[in-house]
Length: 370
Image (cartoon, rainbow, N blue to C red; front, side, top):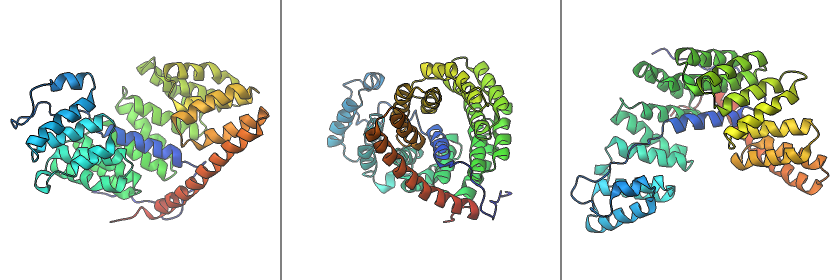
């Protein structure tokens, strides 16, 4: 396999890309999570008949499911299916540490199943322990190389762990195995972003939208990097294409707002689009952040504060949100809250500076090898 090599010189990283890149990687990780692992009624003869497992699943009563399987395990403590399903119920219920601990009680001789390794990797990812997630993610690929989600998870983990060449190799292999899955091509584009090679990333994302014209994430990735490259006309074209695919796309409206925002003299014209984006998806942090910028430009700090608080509530690591909140509070005469938000911004910026230092070293060297 031909390997794409990273540049040897330190690349020119533009406008602190770390937060954007990690959100992109988080999306790729989410695309690789297992959503249909629950095996239903166990076939070992150990699973209890009442209450109905399907009914509990249907109404999302995962705590009740946990109790059902815990009670059954008292009678059959070595039953793998019961243990796995109890861990899965806790994963669905949001009890991630408990799910991990339950999975780790499975005997080593019973861990040779794809669903076990996939769930363990997924739980570790959700807990933010990416190093611990890597081994089960690799094992899941080895156990079931025909499962595209296993490859997605592994590629995104390599990105998150800054193993760039490993990620590229994984995506290239997976693209050959699954030519109809756009996520692997998107992953290649994310690597180009990490290398600060924006024209190359644009070309990759444009290929995604050409080859997979109904794939919404492709337009989102393409539009956002066009915003970063200050290409308002191209952003509008991408946004309109996305809205043709999905007329209710909040991200499509957000991109139209961004196109106006980065066009000289048209900043205030972005307001109706960004308001529409937030109507369609109140949790779109990027839109709330842009709405705050629009109101600050219009001399409306009180309105800006409401939007910016919404943005950081959805995305607590969104450092620009805190910086703009400090500016808005200062404009409104509230120096106390301005200093609080500025301190939060500085703490996040310091952490990002360290991340960017690591990222720069990674980009220059091609990433650590095992």
